[in-house]
Image (cartoon, rainbow, N blue to C red; front, side, top):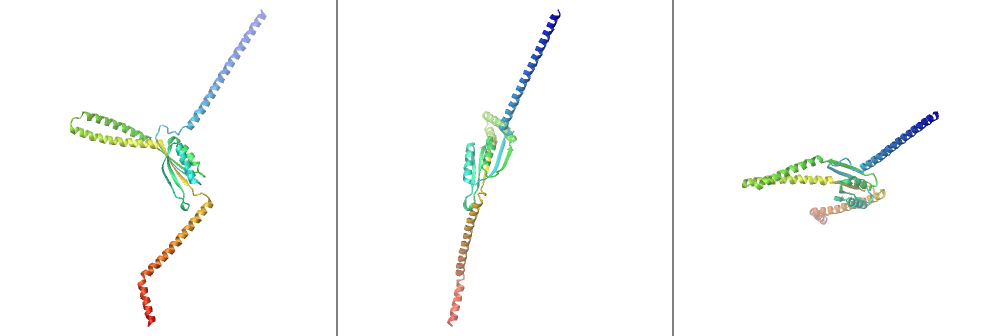
Length: 277
C-alpha cells in the first residue's frame, strides 16, 4: 500500500512538472510572436517614414506657387547653358525667357527663365546648383493661393447657375423688352465667368509649373585670362581715345583757319603793304 501511494505521488509530481514546462513554452512562443510582430511593425514604420521623406512637403492638396532665383559661377558659359537646357528638357520643363551678353571686351553672362513641373522643382534647383564651380546663391519663394482659388471656384459655380437661369428665362420670354434686358444681363454674367475662369487657369498654370531663373556668373574665369582681357581692352580704349583726340584737334584747326581766314587775309595784306613801303 505504501509503495502504491508513493507511485501515485510520483506520477502526480511528474504530471505537474510537464504542465509547468508546457505553459512556459507557450509563453515563450507568445513572446516571440509579439517580438516578431513588433519587429515587423517597426520595419513597416521605417518603410513608411522613408516613403514620407520622398513625398513633397506638407503642401499636398493646396495651391502653391513657387519661384526661385539661383546664381551659379561657371567657367564655360556655353557648356553650362547647354547642360541647363538639357536638364530642363529632361524634366519636362520649357524656357520662357533668355538673355546673354556679348563676349566683347571681356563682358559675358546671362540668365535663363525656366518653367519646371512643381514635383521636380526642388530636384531641378539642386541639380542646377551642382553645375556651379562654387557655392550657388539660391532664393526660393512660395505663395499660397488656395484661398483665392477656392473663392474663385465658388464664384464661378454661382455665376454659372445665374447664367443657366437667365438662359431659361430667355427661352420663355415673349416681349422684346424682356429679351433685350435678359440678353444684356446674360452678356455681363458671361463676361464675369470668362474673367474668373481666366484667373483660375492662370493660378493652375502657375501652381503646376514653378518658375526658376538661372543666372550665369562668369566673373571668375581665371586671374591670368582676366588680366589679358583687361590689358587688351585698355589698350584698345587708349588707342581709340588718342585717335579721337587727334582727329578732334585737326578738325578744330581746320575750322579755326576757315573761320579766321578774313582776319588772316587782312593781316597778310597789311603786312605786305608795310613791307612794300
